[in-house]
Image (cartoon, rainbow, N blue to C red; front, side):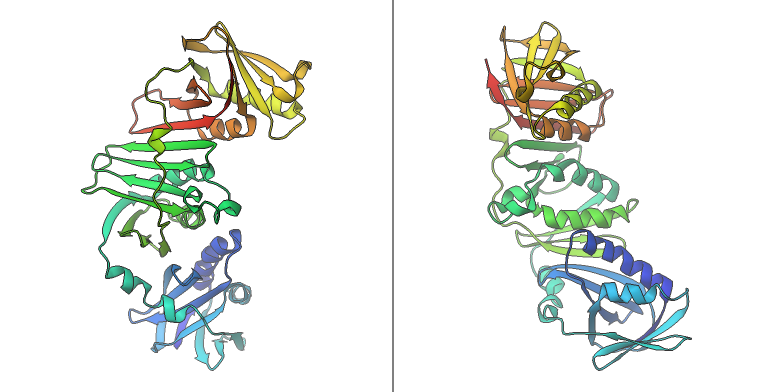
Length: 385
């Protein structure tokens, strides 16, 4: 292996990759491999089946099939000490030597125990039946931002991996993206989504966070998603390729928990900012960080109580709303204030439509004009009638 490259371009490429690795406290090792098209293939592996590939143009001095594995952090630290100059890199035994105008610098290399597994992963995927979906990267980033915080935390992944992911459903006329942590559920729908086949799969939060970091650097490009029958999925970005495993379990029937009979106890429209700031204010005075708050209706006014500090002046607020339907004369219902703050903060619209059922609430943003998307959010509650 012997090639030359401008230090700035290699540094920039490695730094983008390192940001993804560092944010999620992942493996620090990367591998270099020369392709025949005067490109350096840079490979990072979370494990033997979950890999990121990226490429940079180089001038090949001597082509070999060997692969070099090294520390990305160490390489970045060395490259930052150079101005934008041409460097020559050559593999010699257990080092990758950098030849510059100032001297020769030896980068230590080591054995990649994933090499024998990951070198053929794309070939193995290609042998399976594949289905392809094309998405705007900006839209995909929006999907992830809407759904990821509804998944369970990483510490619960081993106990219930299916709830640690986002469920993707592609139909011929629309696409649904669903996530839940059993306390909250979001169904984000894109209407008039055109695809010639029905595909559904679940991807782990851990891998989707990596996808999101890549998308932040490729906001104006399309991406291709290749699905390989409940095994792997490959994301093709402009400058990266990411191959990861799917969660090979059936997603729970989320439709069974979404009420469809419209027999809600109370439905109302309310200003999102007014409701959000009121809950935040009550939470500031609350004794507990994750407190429960009660909703109580009196004509067209909504009273909000903090369950932990009932009786104090700071625990009660009253705000105006438009009640559309009310089937109970007297009703109180409790919600986790932290969950409500996160949900309301995730919505961009000024007003929300809120339905209250037995032990749950359903929120929908109220759009000013017709949109090719819809959002339904369900939050579990404690009801007191």
